[in-house]
Amino acid sequence: MGEALHVILREIKQGQKMMSDMNERLMNVEQKLMPELNGKLLNIDTTVNRIEAAQTEDVIGLLKTRRKYTDTEFDYLHSRLTHMDKRLYQLEKRDGR
Image (cartoon, rainbow, N blue to C red; front, side):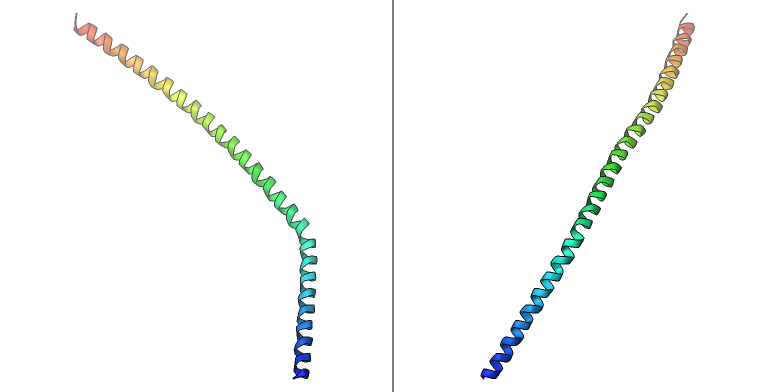
C-alpha cells in the first residue's frame, strides 16, 4: 500500500505542476492580449461615438430639410386658400347684388 500511495502522491504533484504551468501560460497570454484588447475596445468605443454624433447631425439635417418643405407647402396652401376665399367672396358679392 505504501508504493501505491507514493504513486498517487507523485501523480498529484505532477497534476499540480501541470496546473501551475497552465496557469502561468494563461497569465502570460492574458498579459499579452489585454493591452491589445483594451486598445481595440477603445477604438470601437471611439467609432461608435463618432457614428452616433454623425447620426444626430444627419437627423437634424433631415428635419431642417423637411421643415423647409413643410413651410413651402404651407405657404402654397395658404396662398391657394386665400385666393379661393377671395374668389368665393367675389362670387357671393356679385350674386348678392
